[in-house]
Image (cartoon, rainbow, N blue to C red):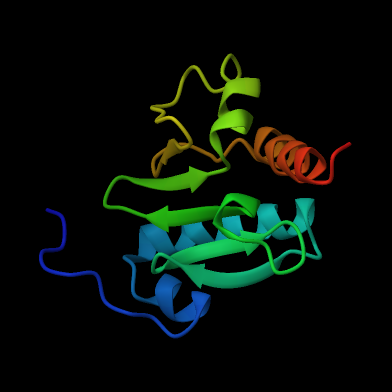
Length: 127
């Protein structure tokens, strides 16, 4: 059952992760490591009360990628253009316009996530 009531305010990304279930914590830590591997210079912040990674210095919301934990999946929010570019490779996952759900009971597609982060970063850099 999902948590009820307003989402709490967290001080740090570590605080956000530590307030999730153990299974969600593990997936978020894995996803965080993959994002940091793909974009080591990305600044880690909280935006909309969830972990976000700026892909350009002082990046605004549309220059960030985000992640969030849920009861049965972790959400990854790389931006609609990235989702469109990788739609075929993401076909096995539930998707939204700018998001994808990675189920907790399956391994994260590390290579695909790395490619998506690098794609979005190069898109922002105009390459």
